[in-house]
Length: 247
Image (tube, rainbow, N blue to C red):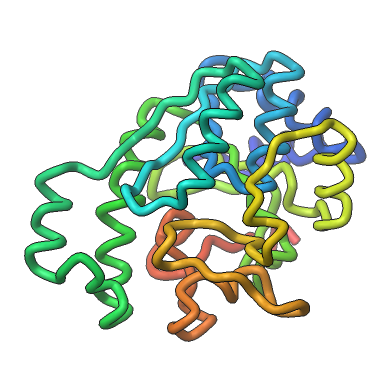
């Protein structure tokens, strides 16, 4: 396990720097073993822009669940063309996907939380484990404003499941600041963001939200808000939080 002093040193490294500079500083400590997972959301597009502009030695990966919006696929192609950064695509394991659909049906995820989590496990969690193989740093687009659970996270933490450090460079960036960055740098983004979709995942599991609704309300809207995590950022059934000593 990574030691608390290691995390403390990294947190000191990023202190008082703007997020692109902090991102470059942290990635400089993990050349060739840093992985950025993108779903092509607004946050991820900003991070990818910063990685490309600074020429950071970061491997970029994405998960194609087989149920994405066409707008997401179009943005994927546009992003490759704009930045020229290789993006490794990971898909669900075919046999596992066949079993899932045979046992629970193509839209069984609506029948129960157990079914939905099983779908997320096959389409997201298991492919992510392959995408992170060999990495020592995982970069995400998580922000505090996205949910109450995410508001409690630390910017750098140890991920026990994947045995690596996890870094959220945009954790304290507001949506206003994020949109200003995207506009200033003409970063390509998903047009669904302008139609009320702050968080974009699989098409059957994502809807627009009303003004003032939390960003995550549009994901799996038929479920209790407290259970709305797909499993990518969850350990032992809970979103990873910072320890008291990190506060």
